[in-house]
View 1 (cartoon, rainbow, N blue to C red):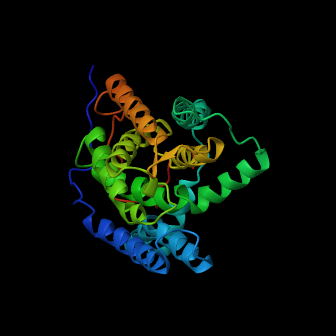
View 2: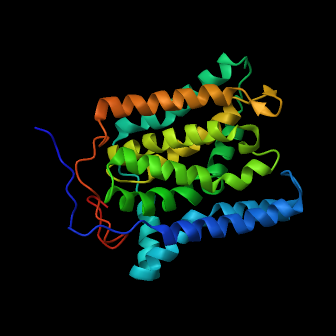
Length: 283
């Protein structure tokens, strides 16, 4: 029997345009200020501070929007639930290995040879980047707040594609700051890779029981892979391995869609009427 998506109530939320504008506005303001300090990263601690603060736009705005409806206690619960470690351990292998396999394959097929083996350096970088390099400061906004609202209006593949485009566009100012990953990646390649990854993230989120922690762990392993597999093959300012990585990310997303269908295994739309105060099972 084919499963159907059933919403917990008959109302559908409007597209979260207010959140999107707030998150973009907050981030881009700080990143513009950082850009004014110099057209490349490494212009001093103040520039770095501005870049880091700007990166927290999605999570900070998610907390603000949750607090408007459920109070700051609700926002605190919302943050706490994102770190809930109770998800299937069988998912952990996918979360750890797939980003390393994808980026490792891209690295070695474009001439890479040497990998980073300093475990202390890798662990320290992983923890630092988990909280300040993307997962913690982005995923609460995109997957904790926006994704459930998109799923109440569109099927999971369409919702993921829309979210992927938003997520990609949010990074836009970094393309003009030399030394960032984005500045070494063609715009269309970045959009393709990031949008494909959004489908993978949605699948992980669902497999984990609508929990954010494994999504953030996967995000962080994707980021740390550029340290494990340093990217020295820059030609004309472009990292060639990003082309291969984008194709592999697209292949992974298409595999999940072909296997699970446009619903990505999601049988029920998550409740968008509360972000924090309704406890999750087992939390």
